[in-house]
Image (tube, rainbow, N blue to C red):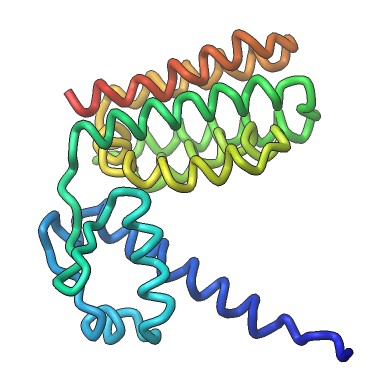
Length: 218
């Protein structure tokens, strides 16, 4: 049989992911407020895409707890529910703990360089006048992403894709506050443990780092 042309599939995948990220970020930064109704025609006009990638993105956001879908009625932005946030935080902390434990024995020098660079970028973002929450979030993602990628466990990444969006709102609060500066030192301790080959300590510190988000919610 002829070899399928996968280019269109890749384009659709990228489009779907772009729509998801755009909607997720709009909810996290408050562009779309809790309780706001998400109407397909309005989203189509705003995003310039068809209904299919929008519906796929909304399903992913529903699984992450960022939207509420009422069949036959409406899809709305979910409130920042404390129980849901705590549940997501516990899952995310456990997944990052596991990722660090699995990754430490496998880390190479270029991985350590990426960890150092991400932490330095986090330090720079937090020192910006007026705060640099978006840049800080990006740097933090890249820091922890090194362990997730090196762990070799795709299920860790899959679970985090569901759990992390729920935490974005309190992450944004934390990275816009002075409390976030503690993360730089916490990351440095994680790197030191990883360089020493101490997977258990790196895993424990990674979990503790994620559990500090409770300070932002309090």
